[in-house]
Length: 282
Image (cartoon, rainbow, N blue to C red; front, side, top):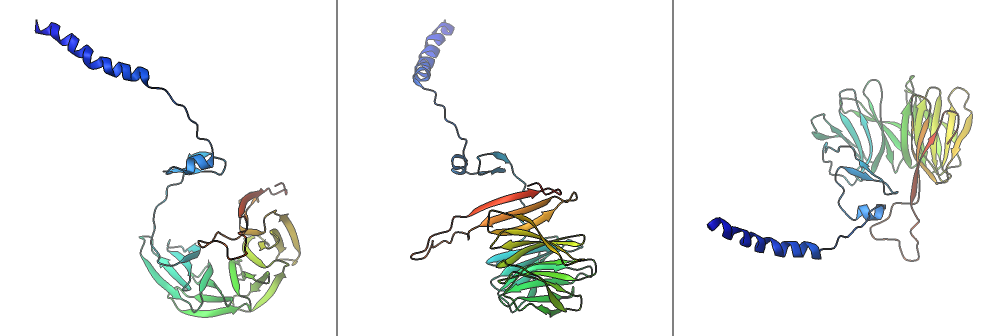
């Protein structure tokens, strides 16, 4: 019967496959380092320098600002995002819908720091002339303060409307009244004071050269050292509701596409994030 002739045909078809399976050898390999994982394409995961793979945050493109550098971002009460940029020294305003417009076109090269007060005025710290501009919500600009320095790296504001400016290259922190009158609050031994964080009556400042975190009492003017990091620069500071301090520290300049110049060595770049508890434990 025809049914009987099917079985030899099926056997002949399967037999070469079985032989091929017997001839296949199982190989085992392990991927456990950052170098192993970074050789592939990471999708929706983050890879730490220790080779740890975790789910990453979802990233959404808000807008496309056609500038070489984005230095700072702040958000107002209406959820508009303000972007400080370089090399044209512009401030962009991006609506919640993602529409970008030039909010302020400064005469400076870089807008490195931004701040918004209770009235919605924007303050822009710039380089290379160390100016702070005040721009009203309806885009009217004015020169608010001239620091006499080259860089205004960060800005902070207290409840009375006094503004604090972190500057370089002489490592000074300025206190500026709402009327624009300024004075040196702290003259450090750093090259730059790169970041500020105001909590209550204490202004925290991060330095570039010695990598020190300072605490400045706004009541007495007394300055104390919170932590001396092994890195040269304290790049940014944050403090949680319990008073724990988070500090991002780094050493070395970012690698240049052209590499180091003749006779120069590229300084090794290293970074750390420190957690300093409210009782001083690191």
